[in-house]
Image (cartoon, rainbow, N blue to C red; front, side):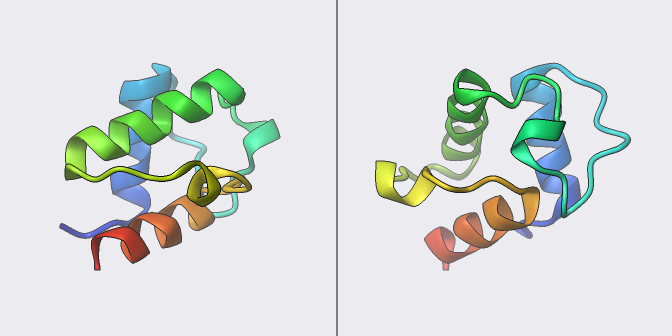
Length: 78
C-alpha cells in the first residue's frame, strides 16, 4: 500500500470527520480542525487499524505535520 497524501486525507476524514480538501503535506497539528491530542490518537489508531501495525508512544510524539506522519508510517511498514 502506498502511504501518501491521499491515504492520509482518507485517514483524517475518517478519524476526525473533517473536510480534507485543504490538507497538504505541510499541514500542521495546530492548523487542522480536530487535530488536538485526542484527534492525534484517533489518527494513529486509524492508521494502525488500516495497516495492522502498532506504534510505540515514542514513535508518535512529535509527529506534527502530515509529511511526518507519512514518513513515520512508511518506516513502520517497510
